[in-house]
Length: 273
Image: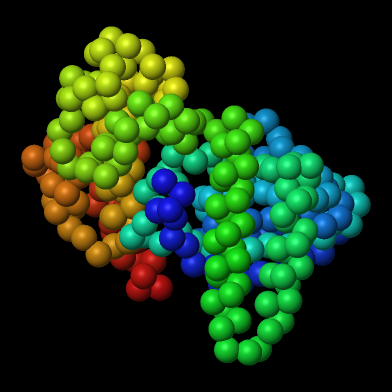
């Protein structure tokens, strides 16, 4: 699954903010933050506040527009890596990731300090290939964060379920062929389990029944396609396994709270701007 990651990073920069000052980031991008000094408080709506200490590494796989990120009482310095997941590879899977993934210093220091030094050197490098080097380094950092997160057993959803080889086979099938109407019996057979044991194990690891997960995966993939603004609603619905545009639109609105046409129109409007 990690091999499917494709991302583009375009900027690494250091920011110093005063005590209690709010940190602003590009709302259309994902970010990695590495704290060099001070503290950062991250709040996402009603979720519990996360506090980032010196040396911690934070992955923000989604747009930070719903987050409030502010310094602690002292001056704070943070290095920010800006990137985005390429639409052709990992973007749909990002919907399954939480808004924040925090790797504490004791888990990150062995690799983050060295690669941070290298990234900052490349950022100031005007030689040909510098931008490519920065992008590849951010790529490595994101993969390392996800690998550490799973190793800590902090992962949830499909990432956690990949630790079970049998359930992983069923997930791989759902991910790779979203347009197929999978049945419980077929998925259980693929996992080498009885129907009841498969459903129980899948639900325990993924926190939802197999067919519900399949439907949410299809809709998340469809949202990715629509937000690219290059596909018609009916074509997207058919690509992810819906037999009619009406059925796709009903399912999409029920899950996301807006119609697929709304998301498609918003993406087209953002492109024009």
